[in-house]
Each structure stands twice: as C-alpha cells, then as structure tokens.
Length: 110
Image 1: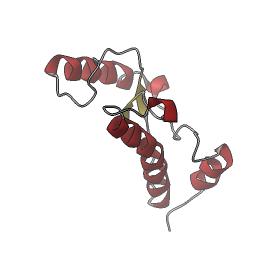
Image 2: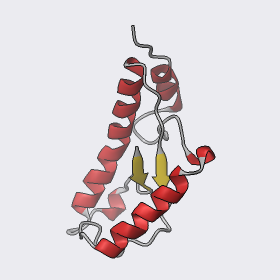
Image 3: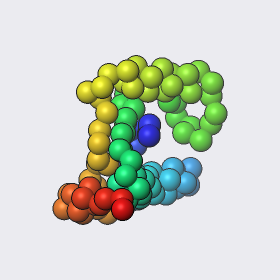
Image 4: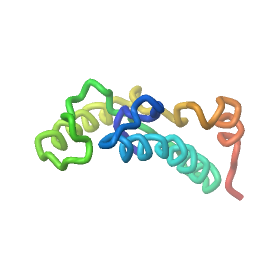
C-alpha cells in the first residue's frame, strides 16, 4: 500500500475548499487500520510506504495534474525499491492508540 504523507487532519484546516481533503485524510487512518487488520486476519503481510509530504503536489489536491502524479509515482517507486522504507504496521493517530495496533497485529488466519 502506498499513500501520500497526509494522514491526519485538524479542525483548523476545515475551509470551503479544504473540507473534502480533510475528510479524505481523516478517513485514511481508518482505511489503513482496516487494511492492516484484514491482512493479518487473512494471513497476509502488511507493507506500507508513505510518500513524504515534501513531494510537491501543488495547491489543488483534487486536481489531476500529470506532472504531479509522475512526481508522486517516482517518489513511491524510489522508496519502494528500498526494503528498509516499508512499514509493517499503520501509523498510530488520533483514532487508534498504539495498543490497538499491537492487538490487531496478533490476528492470525485459521
């Protein structure tokens, strides 16, 4: 799984044009934890790359700009080639405490 570096959101970010991004970013934490739990429950390994926030994506995060997409793809590809760059658990955040991630990591398929 490869995601951009925007994993959380703050209420201060909520403005007319940023509300959708905030909701999407806020759901990212839940999506990553669900993917982690499902991978563990089905006996799969979980691998995650987070593209750094310093990769330029412009001001409109909903725009489909090919140059920006290529830059993000290149960053993800470069990171993906480094075995040490992969995480094996989702990052903890406001919704999920570290102990929850630890418990979910113990799930096993039968």
